[in-house]
Length: 179
Picture 1 (cartoon, rainbow, N blue to C red):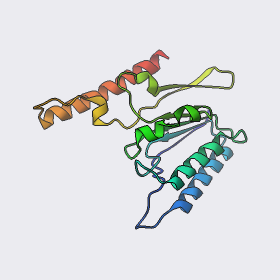
Picture 2: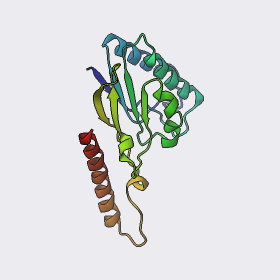
Picture 3: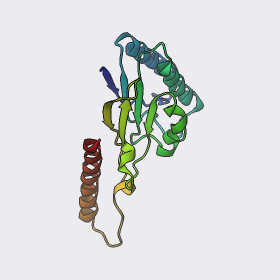
Picture 4: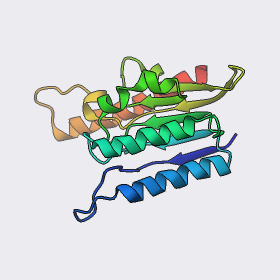
C-alpha cells in the first residue's frame, strides 16, 4: 500500500498582499499528478488545508476540484483523509463530510471528546475488507480537552491541558488497537 502524507497547504494565503491562487492550483495539479504517477492508495492531509477559518470561494473551489480529481476513477487513490489543523474551522471542514464520504474522502474537522471513535478510521478495500486504520486526531483545542474552572492557576491549566492531550491520544490509540 502506498501512502502519501502532506499538510499545511494554507490555501488562500496571500504573500505580501499578493494573491497566490495560480501557485495553489499548480501545487494541487502537481499533487494529483504525483498521486496518479506513484499509484498512491491513500492520501493523508494533516491539517491547515486553508489559511483562514473563512476561506474564499476561490480557495474552496481549488480544494473541492482537487478532491473530485483525486476521487476520479482514472486515479488509483482509494482514500483521502483530511484532518483539521489550527488554521482550519472545524465546522467548515465537517459541513460536507457526508457528501465527501461518497468520494472516499474522510474528514475529521473536530475532536469529539465523548466520541473518540470518530477519530479512528478503518479504511476498506474494494472487497470491503479492512486494509488500514488511521488515527485521525485533529488539532486539539483547549476547549475540546479540558474544562475551565474558576480560580485555576496557569500551572493548573497547563497541567490539565497536557493531561487532556495525553488522555485523548491514549483513548484513540486504545480504540484503534481494538479494531
